[in-house]
Image 1 (cartoon, helix red, strand yellow):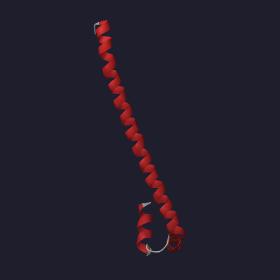
Image 2 (cartoon, rainbow, N blue to C red; image 1 turned 30 degrees about the vertical axis):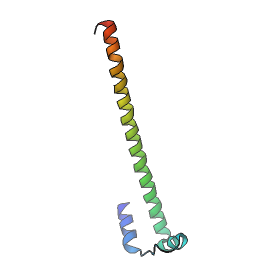
Image 3 (cartoon, helix red, strand yellow; image 1 turned 45 degrees about the vertical axis):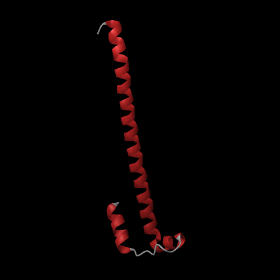
Length: 79
């Protein structure tokens, strides 16, 4: 993926001041596929980051529940 993006950027001269359809015509089919691949990669990384953050929050909530319940059990059963 990185090699394909590097090749695309080194071989393409794009005038970004032109309208979007003109830019899409300048980059060609290979460039469109590379941009699509890059977009998919960014979405995948963002999704993984959100899942990991959510998992961390769930673990913190579980620890918080354990700290709230253990003293109650200890008081009742003398632990």
